[in-house]
Length: 338
Image (cartoon, rainbow, N blue to C red; front, side):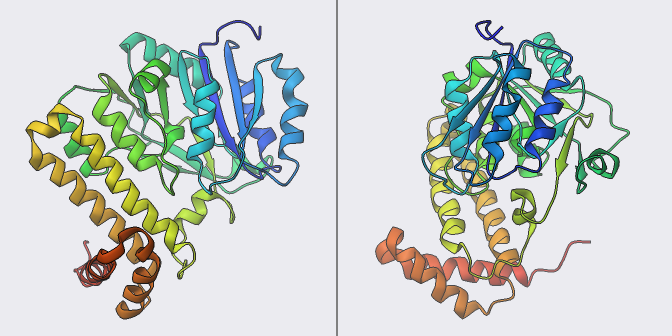
């Protein structure tokens, strides 16, 4: 079985999830198709996560791999990239190692992707749970429109896709996407080694995929607990902890997107869309910073930004720090939408 080329490669980045990794692996074992491989990429865990994964290997009959990163970068992008590098499946599914998928999910993905010859399937709905063990699936909160059962196919109309993207139509999380591996490899689509890298990654998918299918049904259960990455991302009480990582995401993320658009004919011929994308991403990031530091006086924000930006921006550290802090101040004073 291990030598057979799999139809699907399930890639899981993993870091200190000894309480949950078993449930994640069991949900993959419960799928009604066996021609899949699971690649768990351990990101320097210090608990018993790796031992638990190894204990599942006999049940997967050679279809489970455990890889290791050399260092932890504080984000899931590098381990996901490593998993993609070692994958063999026709399709790729990125799954978090503390969540679960419903029975029949992978078979449904495969059928839809084959039927539409799709590069990308994107889910719109999912379920949130804070339970543990048996309570995990019983105590859930549905996110999305439970009455939306209409599968949608997006054309290659780039202005329409950019408009939908600017309106936050697309969910950016990797675990709501099912992707053709050749599409990712041929277009060299990888995750950036920065915080919340999935939004930049999703933008590339939207711009490069020929066929995108939107799936309405909820098939994924996302676990939320105090120390999960999802919960930390939603927590606004950061003070100045990790400020360099936040600014690194903005500086390097914007630079990456701008260079990416520079290589696409549509944006070359339509610079107004290129500017609109950069403006939209900038405002999103400024809003993100405001939610993290909005309770701190503007002059203190400026001083801290200037301190950490000197390394990357040199003589422009004063100007950029002032612009960022001023933008945050302006956004915070805008009337709230009802």
